[in-house]
Image (cartoon, rainbow, N blue to C red; front, side, top):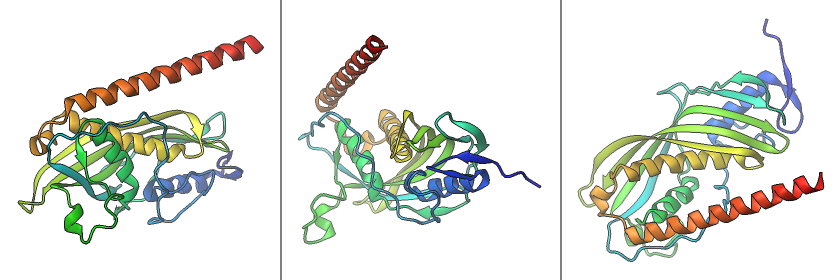
Amino acid sequence: MEEAKTIFLGGGYMDHRRNLGAVAALVVGLATPLAAQPALQVGSPPPPAAAIAKPPITMTSKPMKTLQLSKVLLDTETITAKGKIKGGTWCVFPSPVKLEKVKKTENYERYDVPFSDKLKFRGYKVVTTSQDLFAKDNAEKAADFLIGATVRPDTINMCSSVNGEKGEIILQVEWQIYDRAAQKVVETATTSGRGEQLKFSTTGYVEIWNLAFADSLDALIKAGTLAKYTGDADADVAAANQAAADKAAAEAAALAAAEEERKKARR
């Protein structure tokens, strides 16, 4: 008989096997962090996308075809996710990832922020789910191309503690590009994306998942797949955004270095 192991996970002592089920439910439902909600059933509403500090995004005025995220599916059946789930501040008691096998429609609005932010950052025009809320009908806020995404977890290495989650997620995303004018799917492509967070955060799991999703989209952009249909992105806008991001990263690194020096001086 399997021995029940007890680890410190999600704010209290819990049965180790129960925690694995909780993590699986978290992945399948994209639920709130383990520290806040140990287990949710498949289909539980996902949390809003985590607010991540980022530099201002310059928008393009260049005439281009527009893009909009239309549908997102979660598929844990096609590939078997690998990785380890650990618990506690010291990230101990590793256990293999085991996800419930499902194919289900996700609330795509929670993906809209990382989707639209990445495309705008790269100089593309995007129609978001949050804009034009008072349009008379859907035709007034319809994009030229609709994007569908099937998200397949590939690797999940997570650690959960009372301070939240940290770790790494790798997603395989199958993209479909639908031409509204032609009323057909014009291309299908699959890319991989990786998200990582080295420090615990109460919204760590969602942040890491969003980073992996956005990284997969970035791979699609860099392959030139979208530009074939929308026209070339605004290179000046993309360059300005990249410069702002580099500056913000440099400033953040300088602040972190200064804080580390202050800590050393106090020792």
